[in-house]
Length: 65
Image (cartoon, rainbow, N blue to C red; front, top):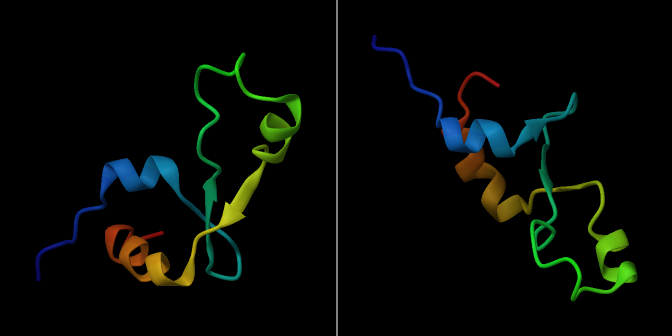
């Protein structure tokens, strides 16, 4: 059987937890931060769990994670 390839873009964006859930970074914190409030930037720190509807697609892209 041929090996499955890992989607390299997804591998850089998602991490798998010990329980098998996928974590992602929050959006809108890359640039133009001067126009955003301190509170909104603070809320975008850390990671959040991927939505269950999208988790299956990510699981297919990361077969060996």
